[in-house]
Figure: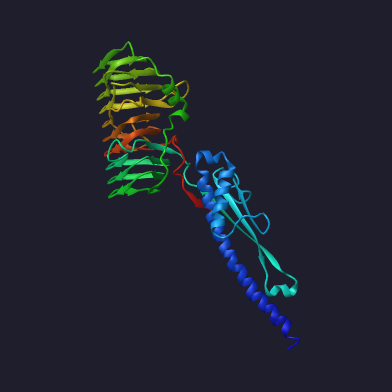
Length: 391
């Protein structure tokens, strides 16, 4: 018995101490997982992205809430962005958390081993690209801010951001993430990669977009103006100030530049309209009404209004209508709207045809037919980026 007591105590130490460490390791791993998610979620916010203290604090606070408070001595919570190891070392939106804890030994003290270090690791990163390409700004103008009752919305490369009420009753919506600051209603329709979730309200991103900020801060003259109507023939139009521009037929080429619309609508109801490097400034008293025809319109790639296709002043609350025209789900669409559509004080109504602006920023958005397809230019905030565990 005297000889056997030593191995008996050794097996007891192994059974109790190792079992204890395994249990603590599981708790540590849960804490590391949760802390990595918290750090990545905080990393999504623009202000926090520029401040390591914010996401480090978020991760360590979360670890502490799970029983592992960083003290730098017996409990060390290390937070890295990007991760220091693994498959995401080049990712600026990935956060790595290592929880290292010194655990006391019990029976193993008999063998002069009083403590063990245990380290657990987790990595979380943001899904999508963390920014919105469809932004609804006004939660009070209508019973909804963004509404989809039919057709399709495809923003798989970026996010949908809703400052107020989300109403989804039909059609298909696909996005990297969908964030809603107010109520979420879904009574029909089909989600793609992500469903709507609660998120912080987006702000108007205009001032962070060079072309939009230029038009906002340096509005063009709106007088004198001339009305123009085209119904047939082959016509080339020049940039300028228009007291309304109506195109109902013919073949119309819009020369590159800024087209200022005032006192009456910019309306395309027929014909073939082509414009490369064009921006439409919709002043008070004017509106956008595209109901037919074949359109191929693209914003400037450089210059003061780079990226802006339609800019409607914030004080203009007249509904912008995209209600028809030839088109197919892109790629291969014959209704092309390459550029940002900006109607911050008004409803953008999409009821027919397929339209593919690179981004939409609207007071409110309604899609009931046709759709917005292949949105590709992130312009909004990153409040709706989702953090997921990857390691």
